[in-house]
Amino acid sequence: MLCGQPCAAEVDGFPQHLSAEECAAAVAAASPAAPAPAPVPQQHPVQPPAPEPAPAAAEASAVPEAGPAPTSEPAAAAVRGPRTYASGSLVDQITGRVQEVLEECAGDMEAAGAALLKSAIPDAMALFKASRVGGRYERSEFPPTADVLKKRSQKGADEIWEGRPKWRNPHVFKAAKQGEAFEVTALDMNAAYLSAFKAWLPIGQLREDTTGVHDRKKSGVHLITPASWEHTDLPNPLGNRMEPGELWVTESTLRLLLDCARDNLTDAPTIHRSLVSGGTEVLLEKLRRALAEVRKNALAEGDELTVNYVKSMYSKLVSTLGESTANRDMRRPDWMHIMRAKAFANLWMKANKIHKAGLQVVEISGTDELHVIWDWRQVFTEGRDLNQVKEKQTYVLGGSAEREPEGDRAGSGVPYTGPAPPTAGPGGGWPHRNGSQPAGGRDPPAARPAVLRPAGRAWAAQARGLRSCLPGLGAVLAPCSGRLYCSRASGADVAAGVRTRRKEGCAVTASGPG
Image (cartoon, rainbow, N blue to C red; front, top):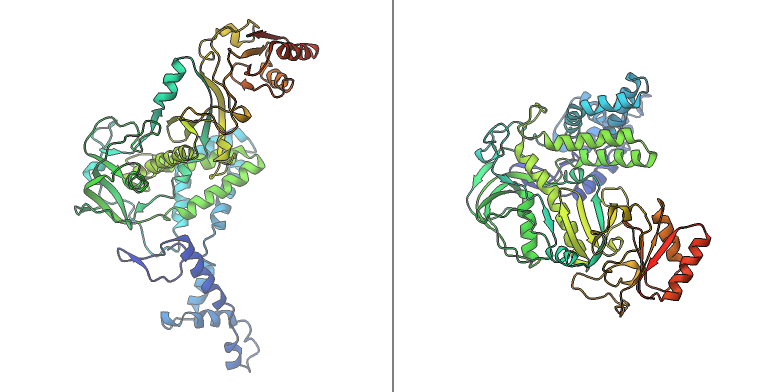
């Protein structure tokens, strides 16, 4: 569908390739046929200018099935260029737009940023239309809107449930209120809405289907009755919905529920009614790849102006596809709901991946926020690419971190006498979700661990230096408070570490047994 090459498969009468691999194979099969001018010069050996029309003749001979065509047709096909899966022209169009605005603003970065943000919606729509050049079918830009997709009032909502997550682990928060401490890492998913471009979108007008069977080659919205969710340590894929009974969900949410049923996490939902059309997952693929490539290059070059411009384009495109006066080029509320639900589904799948790896999910909210316990780097790669995640912050949940006085947090040096956190696992981590220690974990100490607290404004760096003075003592740094918990430290060991740091000019206090 995107490569412009012939294909045998059809969806609702529209010829299209069903995967990116088929597009690549079709382009690879068609490319050797172009440089085949051998038979043409032999038919006209007398004419001197024969080598010049050879490429045109080769193009005409490469597509004999299309019927006879005038000599100007191959030239027109050559102007369209190699219709490959790459998106170099779109990348040049985005970077060229940034340079154009910079020149208009005489290099003023702030003014250029404001101008680019203002033109983000029309620029995104122009890029989308450019990405569809060469497609084998036309999508419907203003199809009739179904009643379930219409807003009930000016500031009201329609009947579609997108499955926005807002969940906290009840077991972790209950333990935190009882005095246990957990070191939690808040992760941020990169470009969540840009990743959601790879969603199954309907091509034409939505038609009613009452068979109750899900057709994976179609897309739309569905009226379902979901099965109950019995897992308390994993968020519900439907989000924070509390009301039981029937509800309208998007294609993205329904496919997520069906995947959960295949993994034996829950039963499959009951489909009562569907509004669907022939669908495809690669409708926005060229645009997604172009935006992702420009974003990646801008991050590597430290070009925050381009990064913000790309972010405003893909985020505003998703938010204005519905009944928005800011976007008058297209009205597809079904696309908007499906793409937003896809972003929520992607976040849930990352939480499930953490859960399968034996780690503990603490909180999940919005489109891109995931809080976990234990070493998340064994599951995800850290970075800013679309397939990576970045760390927002690390904090201590429960224990003393929630009850210490404000002056204590500022580094007053007042000894801490509250309850201690649980014993840490290897590498400064925390227990698994079932409460057991990982392999190689230490036995819990008989008494409360010693607590060393650097004072001063640079307490985080001082605490890390203090930990280096206490090797093999089970030292765990709590970054939010600057405390160092030493579960196997004796009084003499702690005193030696404190003396070492004081000689280096750091104000350190200690409390605990011994």
